[in-house]
Amino acid sequence: MKALVVRNLRKGYGNFLALKGINLEVEEGEVFALLGPNGAGKTTLIRILAEGLRYDSGEVLVFGKPLSKETARLIGYVPQESIAYDILTVRENLGFYADLYDAPRGRIDELIEEFGLPANKKAKELSGGQRKKLNLAIALLHEPRTLILDEPSNGLDVPARRELWEIIRRFRREGKTVIIATHYMEEAEKLADRVAIINEGKVIAVGTVDELKRLVGEGSVVHIEGELRIEGLPEGVGVLSENPLRLKVEDPRRELPGIIEALVRAGSEIRLVKVEEPTLEDVFVKLTGRGLE
Ligand SMILES: Nc1ncnc2c1ncn2[C@@H]1O[C@H](COP(=O)(O)OP(=O)(O)OP(=O)(O)O)[C@@H](O)[C@H]1O
Ligand SMILES: [Mg+2]
Image (cartoon, rainbow, N blue to C red; front, side, top):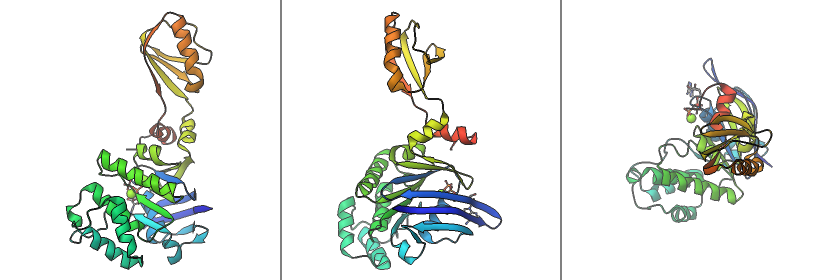
């Protein structure tokens, strides 16, 4: 079952086209990342899915159905900015949104407990990580099948980010679908089953992180340090530099043993071996000629 199908989606603000014909399919149960730089159109796309923002043309299907009040109930949305009311407590915020979404009141305590939230603290007194968890709890009140998060880890410190990623993984283990927008390559790399790279209102590549990295087409680089005698390297290994030794290889898992063996046989003393995989940033640069930031 497809959690989401987007066909030829176009959206302009005045005469500026923010989405220029987006095509996407998200499978139920996967974590899907929309990765792209500022202004790529990620939030615009998400607001169409989650907030009913109007679009100009194209088609959007959520679990096979066109966007409607019914499909809205299948989606939980965590916007980039907090939607909690500062002067209300955690419990009051959850109560307010539970009424708004017509969610069972019993969910409030479940979520407070699940996320370890301080029920009686005012939202304005929460740390950034707690505030994000409160927003996540609000999005999960009505038990959606799909969770959509816009730049979820922006502004969070490393522990809070890890905790958030763990919650997202847990949600996925329950068979739910997660869509995240991010310009943070590590977030896409660590979390996503598949990634769509978005630039200037278009999807320019989609695939698993490994599939996308293969687009760079350069394999990996093996970096070796030590007292090296470079002789008899296996065929197909390209020497990029000798000191430090950097070798271009197709598949390090296959080629590394032969490389080490040749160096050792030639009398080398090896101190350090590192495999440098291409990053999604490299993929983006390759496709667009510029960086993600
Ligand atoms: N309400 C609006 N009115 C006019 N232009 C807008 C509006 N919202 C977004 N845009 C423009 O549409 C383009 C896409 O914006 P969008 O917010 O979707 O990008 P984004 O990928 O979410 O970027 P970011 O990573 O900065 O959040 C940008 O050029 C932006 O300036
Ligand atoms: Mg955005």
